[in-house]
Image (cartoon, rainbow, N blue to C red):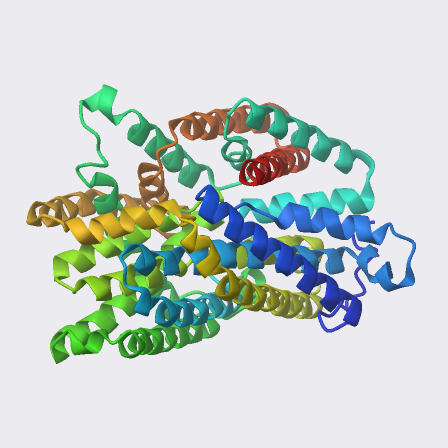
Length: 528
């Protein structure tokens, strides 16, 4: 019954008038929600489940115009569009352009808006190229993507699948009401155990560093150093994977739908695109007049590398844990930029550009994972490719709508003092500067971060996930992750893997329940 909507040949297309109208409408709603939440609460909600539920409701309205939405693949396109618009408007666009506004550099807002809009689109295109390769396999967790897929399948099939999902949603909502990060608990049953264990330990160490060690590890820039070391090694590991020719082509074809060649092309296109955007920022922002030729070249190269590294780190964390420290990693980029000696205006563009990259990449990864499951986990690759292509189109529609919503609304929000809170952190850091002792601390703590990433290898990503945990001040999430992992191990051993599918569906429901409650609660608070 899972494949009743799958023909293997005719995937719903974004360019069908009914589907196009609905995805544009949902993108507008998603973008407005994203802008409101990021400026009033400093967060961006996961609207994928909301979009999927809306499409399911449309499918049950007895109008011929809405008949297309009975297909789970049409529902997948709707949730892709609203999710892209929400994250795009909030984290990829509104947050970056708030930085020059806070600093009083209003002349940089439009140049940065143009740059981050282009970067957001490049982000999506690169994920599309890299999805289901050695670096970002479709079979990896991408937890929010699993949650959305299970919600859509449960709505389509009903039966036991719906019962397990609804039970999970109930548990997720109750836990969220009790202030427990249930998405972290649910992820523990889905993601890589090694990576998530390091993530949980990192969360606990950050949360309890003062009572345990008598110091706040964040003030010593220990998490930042760990992420720098792990990030450098992760980048090297990706490059090694691209150029590794030892693996048989036939074996690779069985594991991934895309060869190393396409992954290498994505890297090449990414470096070219980010370099071009960096040059454009320097020209449109006028910062080329403030720096020597050598410093200007250094700015362009560093901005390009930082954007690409940021994208990979955010993407890897999102793939394994469903959480990503986008804002914190951008702060690392800013700290290094200050230590290099870039002028204030260049730093504003640098951190805005860095904060943008990775978000659209991770979000589209979740959506493509949803589609991958709904299309049969790659059993029909022709159908899978058609589906991914239409999801990319739906995501791009969402991003373009997000850009329009942001450009017509940001002045109204900023003039009322509604600015993403993290922008104040970036602005304060630029204005206050960084001492030279911090450079030493970053270098020292980069060493264990690099070692841990090497030990875990490219599949476990232990260094990246441990550093991700260290950067997030949510100790209760650490307890939730580790508790979930212990329960997962016990269930799997006692049942000999018999209840793995039911466990996954319920975990997806827990993540969905947490997302639904968080969304509704955020909308309520923003409305007040």
